[in-house]
Length: 147
Ligand SMILES: [Fe+2]
Ligand SMILES: [Fe+2]
Image (cartoon, rainbow, N blue to C red; front, side):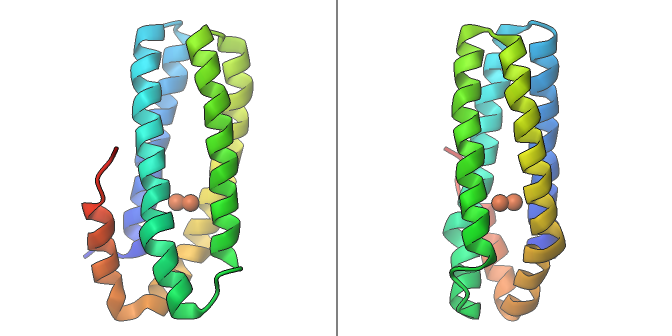
């Protein structure tokens, strides 16, 4: 059975893989593939953020009474990443590989630090606090559609 940690950590890895393919496509100057992979990546990352923001974080906040703590910080970091992604979209549209790589490096750093905090702290705390609710939360996250 998946825990919050195992399920969301695996999803981080899946997003990282699409991101790596996206960077390769830009490096190859393959803009058709870049467009496809950028759309895929945006969809995957937004879906990941939505699973956290609409299902896991609220459950954690309700159970622990901590709404201004780690989840507030994670929500803020999601906004930072969304903002970088918006700028990257402009570079994809303009086929500006150099500028794209400046931004993708920033995004990579933000993602790595963010994911490390979640994997090493928040997900473990969530599994510990949510106990018997974990199974239902994981299945609700799995049921959330990508759009
Ligand atoms: Fe997150
Ligand atoms: Fe995450």
